[in-house]
Length: 347
Image (tube, rainbow, N blue to C red):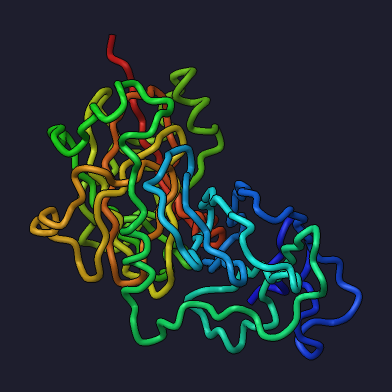
């Protein structure tokens, strides 16, 4: 458990005299009534999913990680490690008091985590008093494990919005492109390999070589890594290797991220935005493709995979280089839960 959740590097507002000591510097966002503001919210933590909400205000989701979204209101949104979102906040409430801004831990024993909740203040220019009373409630989904996943599924790409893309707006149809490569990447709880505690992807715990992989690739240093990462999880005992995915330039790769651990995993791919086309609980199978969103799945670089569940992404391999695919959970990343995708222009 961390010591606290910070908002812009500052501790919590003293909303509770028992849980929050006096004298802590907290963040205040000053606003004027009747205006609309853009808030960009990042989870830059190392292991904990957060639920973000502002007391008595709706959050109109507009963008995530460089992609415009279909605009819709949320009272709160789960933001997983490494993810970022832009909200449009309309200051349409009365100014009888300030309002709480809350970032609280998700998928943990929330009663034990109350003391680490991040709390800032939204202050109208004509505010008449300090925020008081209980914090706005987090999602009440203790017995509904699909709530957060359904919320994630509701985040869709705005295919009609203007923006930087290689095709005329609305013309790119990722769902009609033939998949050329398929990789199922499965993570499990930590294991012991050669007496060391390690984490794995598909049975392989990544070993960082003495020569950084990108330098080895650029200067053609032999023997630094192997282009032999398996397309399906290994069936034998786990092993430690510097194994890299061999991607095909201008190919279209389907990657299924299967989380057989007990905590939420977040994966990030450098150098690319991928399409999040599906997620569900259980083991992924060929039949799971029938549930894919083939029209407006969000394009982003970081996605969550819920415990005991899978997330499917599609990647258009148009960016030459060696790109890191890793968990954003720092302890798991450090222990080997990563690989690279190498994409080479053969011309």
